Each structure stands twice: as structure tokens, then as C-alpha cells.
Length: 265
Image 1 (tube, helix red, strand yellow):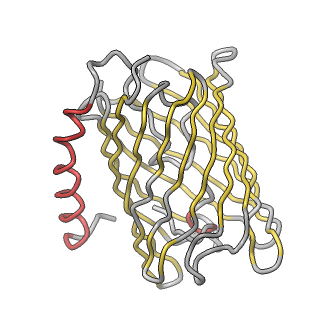
Image 2 (cartoon, helix red, strand yellow):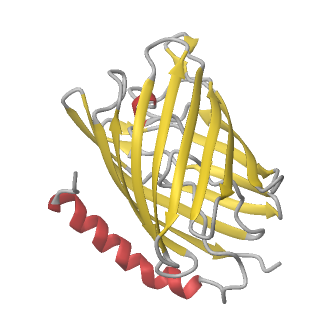
């Protein structure tokens, strides 16, 4: 994804009680149905593209449908923006291939653009997990938010286990967002270190940078943590701080993801 400061749907302190309590209540209401829908553990534990900017380097299992959702509050240039539900649907159509649908986010001025895509897992190779992600954003959003163009992007997420508890990961990306009457080609690079704290709990620190053809670079430091209450569910919290004048001031987000096995292999 483009960094929060570079996309119309803003990215992902402490959540205020006004925002945090309703979100937490909704999340734990969802836990029951999702737990009942989980399989017997014959498939790998959930592995999500959130909350990091860096995508997962593997696809979802064949026949699985994964829902990744969240809400974010962003502060930039004296303004606060709240968006959600940040829904990404991922469906495994083959052992190394998934189809993807990014549902439009909602802002105070309307919905953003819808995006479709696919992920092809290329690894593991030489100890690295690697995938290729192709996405096309469609101009379906509100006039004030939509780019009004068909915007492609290419991402190459990778990861490598350093030990039983430490993992390094990153992603190289190129985006072609429509801005006005032209495209502002933007390169992006990320690097992440993840620490497995317990069997079901991990935390990460991440650097992400956008380098647009027009405009200044946007550098970001990002921290997050996730817990898996069941093998096929995840709750995450994350916060990011801008490191350059073109970046957002900061953002904080909360998410819930779950996976269903629709087709038995």
C-alpha cells in the first residue's frame, strides 16, 4: 500500500475512549462466530497483510477466504481523519495463488476507490519467502476522494527467518496513482523486524518510505503488535510517526482479521 501520507484513504498515542470502546466491543462480538467457523487446525495459522505496510510474503491456503479489517485515526497538518473498515478480502484459488479485493474505505466525504488484484507466491527460494502482488485500483469512489483513474501497482514482499523468534521482511513497490491529469509514479521501500514474543503474540518495528516523481519523499517509522486468540483470528494495534515534512504527523490503528476454510482441499 502507499504510505498513509500518499493515498486518499489515510493510514492507519492511545486510542481515545470514544473510538476505542465501540471498536473493541465490535471485535469481541465477532470473535464467537469466527471461532466456530475455524477449521480443526489442519491449515497453517492466519498470516495477514496488516498491520504492517509490508505485505505478507505468502498466500492464504487454497480454498480459504480471509477477511482483514481495521480502523485508523490519522493526524496531518492539524487535521484528524478517521477511516475504515480497511477491508481486504483474500481467497486462495491455488496452492500458490490468491485473488484479492480491497473494499472501499469510508471517510467523512464518502467512499474511496475499489481495487482488485492477485498475489503469486514465488518462494521459498534460498531461505526467502517471496511473492508478487499485482493490483488495479478502479475509479469507483466519491468525487472528492477518487483518483478518477485506473491505477496499477506492483509489489514484491519478501521475508526470511533469522531464528525461531526473529524474522526480517521488506517490500519493494511501484505505484502509478493518478493525480489531476497525470500519473505521479511512486516507488516505495520497506524494511521490518518482527519478534515472536509468545506462541500467539508478536511485535514489529518497520521503516517505510515513499519516493514520488513529483513531491518530497515520505519517511515513516511504524510499530505494531498482533495477537492470535485462535489459529485463524488476529487482533492488531499499530502506530506510525512521520519522519519527513511530506509525511503525516502520526497515525494509530486497530484491526481484526479472520480466515474461513470454504473449500476443503
